[in-house]
Image 1 (tube, rainbow, N blue to C red):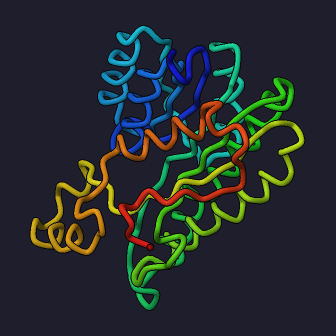
Image 2 (cartoon, rainbow, N blue to C red):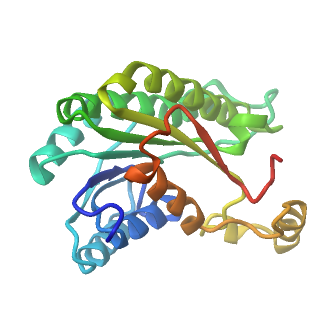
Length: 248
């Protein structure tokens, strides 16, 4: 029995990295997948074909999660196309790192808008259909940086910490409607983005992690499957650290 059989998931920012890993694992578990991307049209088309070939229904939407109206529109389209919205994974995010002394107002606002406001936009867009269904699982992607902070990432840390407070509040508001809201805080996950980093730096990071390796998108995706499925039916308002013991 596939754990997400017949459920429909919206996954934001899924054309690469962690989002793509989640989409692939969800499809393997029987979920229908509606995913968003911002600019990687080719990558999105390839992913859509790959997921459809797995025997589920999948569709990519070019949509900016940071735009309130686009988020509303996306939810309406997915509902029409797929018939339900059972799972929302707010994964879209960016970084614009700099020391506080050098960070521009624009770079602060942009990161808050794309990382945090998008979570508000999409959660607001899906709660009506979820309330009607009297069930739903919302999973928001934070970061170890949102839990412990990081020099040179005040904007990113603020956005990711904000996600945790937001998600706990949603859990309290919507628990009586059987809608669950949880957070995943990934540590050092190795993706296309980290592959561009200096190998020595990456080795140093791996050595500092108790499990002595970086995580994979699949490591994060498997925890998403747990939180999206009925296996976690009595879990809400929690932050799960997927970090190899980094914050232990």
